[in-house]
Length: 487
Image (tube, rainbow, N blue to C red; front, side, top):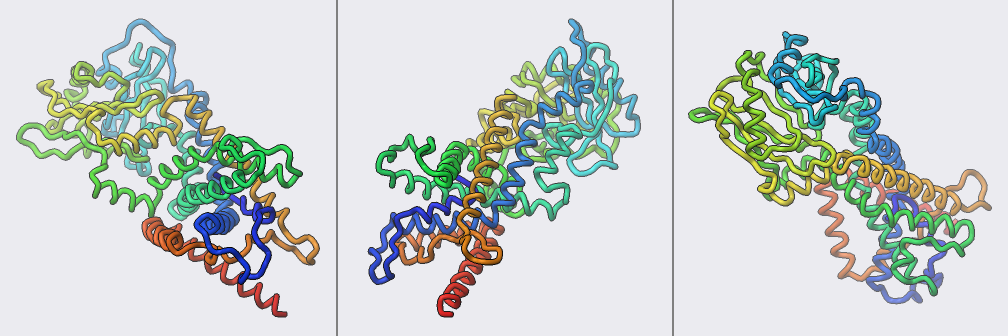
């Protein structure tokens, strides 16, 4: 539901103030609420800043495809015309501008106003980067070149925003921030959901499910802040869980576990084989990963490979690859061309075929309908996370979700700050919810919760380590509280 401190509702919750001996017997309802409250508090206070940074950079990342289309319009678009030059002539013109770089792939123009991308391997570039020459398909004249990144062919602006969102331009150490935020986001939202449902059900006149999504305007200032915190959290809850799951798949530690799990369950993305008859060429990576770069050939392709592009493109379309595609050019005649649909707005399939450039024979084909269900869902989830699944509407939805998440976090910290004891001297902080969550939990609920925490902590290491830190802080606060009370 939320990312930070719905815990402030503890001050208004009907928890008993009598001694422990007079407390009611532990119940599943009270125990789950108490555990969720305490988890939501500590995760919100300590992990909230990481999620806030991810939300702010994510808002910019959400609209980066549109920003890219505006900033790089001169490279991406040309004046429309009725006729186009053969693809081989377009590639030849691009190769003439980069004679020392090996040809890697070609992405023919998707529409009359789009440019053709001719991609080269460049050893001076970083991982997952390629050099692209943009060609006017109507005149076969290059209009410019720049570095592109990943399977979606992001240009420098979108690449810069991507890396800001992923690691704050700090490299591998910076990825810890995004993994910590993504790993905890789904947990803190689920805990917040439990807290908010309990709170809404406790209202006398507003206990219907519809009030989960509508703030109670009859509350005082603090109550209004709390209600907007919970209500907006409910609206962003589904997207927060989805973005958390897809974000974890790109992370360093949890991502490795997810990859291993997918392999064991046969949920990996299938690949097209580039092997020709009598050869043992490797399979072609379908490129569903975040970087999705293709390895550069060891040497430039001869002119006859370029001349085969026209026929290969026509055969691929006749074989069902009808959406805008990228043609991977083999390094040697012993491997086939691979024509695979690109990751673009409104493209929901990734059909692919392998074509023998010499004979024009389709040597392998992979329809998206034949992908495993989980591989399809993973691909759609990644496209949605990148704002490419259904174009501008996708980007605006992500932007709204990130802005909503930001307001939830800010309101959570505001509630936490208002919860501080103002009569004390010094610089007091907001109080944590009342202790005793374990005592309010029945064993049959507590045991599965602890078991689930161990499993999640093992497979998502940053969650496990930070959860141990939360427990240590909680124990320290308890000890200090008893010492202060005794004094």
